[in-house]
Length: 64
Image (tube, rainbow, N blue to C red):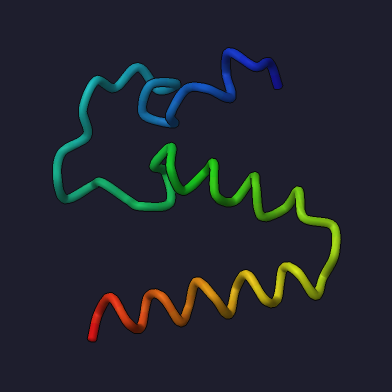
C-alpha cells in the first residue's frame, strides 16, 4: 500500500466527503487506524498486553 493511500481515511478513499452521522463508525476513523497500526508494530506480546490493560484502565476512569 502506498504512503499516500495510508494517509487517507476510508471515507476519502470511497470519495465520500462526509458520512451521515448514523453511519460514522469509530473503526474507520484515522485515529483508530493509526492506533491499530502502532499497536501491531509492537513485537513483544507482554508489552502489548500491558498496553491493552493500561488503555482499558484509562477507559474505565474516563467513563466513571
